[in-house]
Amino acid sequence: MTKKRILFAGYAPVHFVCFEPVYRLLRDDPQLEVWLSGGFKAAHHGEVMFSLEGFYDRFEVDPARVIPFEEAREEDFDVLVCGHLSDSLFPRSVGRSVQIFHGVSFKNRCVREQALRYDMLCLPGRYHAEMYRKRRLIRTGGSRCLVTGFPKADALVTEPIDREAFLRDLGMDPSRKTLLYAPTGDKHNSLETIGENSVAAIREAGQWNLLIKLHDHPKNAPLDWIAQLAHLQDETVRLVHGWNIVPYLQVADLLLTDASSAAVEYTLLDRPIVFLEVPTLLNKMARKGGALDIETYGQKIGVCVGKRDDVVQAVAESLAAPAQYHEIRQRMANHVFHEPGSASARVAAASTLAMPNGLTSRTIPRQARKPCSGCGRCSRISSHNAAVDGPIKAASLRMR
Image (cartoon, rainbow, N blue to C red; front, side):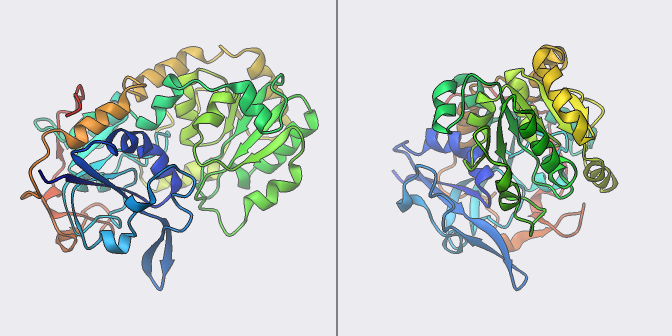
């Protein structure tokens, strides 16, 4: 029997982190041939290029199953699984394309028309299903949207971490409360406002451990924020470089952030959050007409701080009253994440369930993609020019 070919593709480590749990469930299935591709994205003479060098090195993957995208573009796959909305990583043809998204922040970048180029949308939870309806990107009567949950978040509730050992490995005192600073990767993030000064203020206070986890592909280059913040490191402050933020969320007693998805993921742990205000970023996103939602939850799940001098007090008060925002954090977690802990299995099943033998009539070559009617720039599969026909279903699927 011919094995079904599945391609997982991403252009930033965060994409692999999001589909890694699904990849690990499927890679040892004897009926499947599972591949990885993509690489760091860069522009070269106006063309999008991908470099695999160093991309999958930090993850335990079989290098024989990693294929340069220049080669993947010329091959056919039964299933494509992506954690991003770009169509740059589509192979020559594919029988089923699956989008699992890589962010759940209130910026709602996953709620956009470009997602409709994929055959199947695996939505993190009811909240995103409602946002798709609100923006009239789906209709009633079809079945391409599934509420599966968010695979990356499974580990937050199913894989406990040895906090003391983890912090000792970082050379930090586990008896101290630990803070995690994780800004978004967007331009105009908190690093450009009060982030650096806030880190300095927390270090000066000398009361807590502070881990700094920067985004793996920040958009506010060319400034090297790792180099910029390096001078603030000491026995209580550490710049951490792991690409998976989950273990850092697990050991943190409080999250310091701005508009990052990390804040939403952190609600599953029901611990305090302090937001550094980023008005320029939020105003810019609002002007661009996206699905920014600061009314439903936004930064209401924690304390908002706009001045460096207020950060230490906000952290101290939040740690002293960790249950202050418990109800809204819990409400948000239940709304955004569908049955965390088992999402990976549902996405794996949805991706492979009733897979056709070989490529089907839905296989559409790259050249068949047309500019989308929304922005006129990005590509989308021509047969998907209508809104997704819903209803959006909560997935309850078994592995094949």
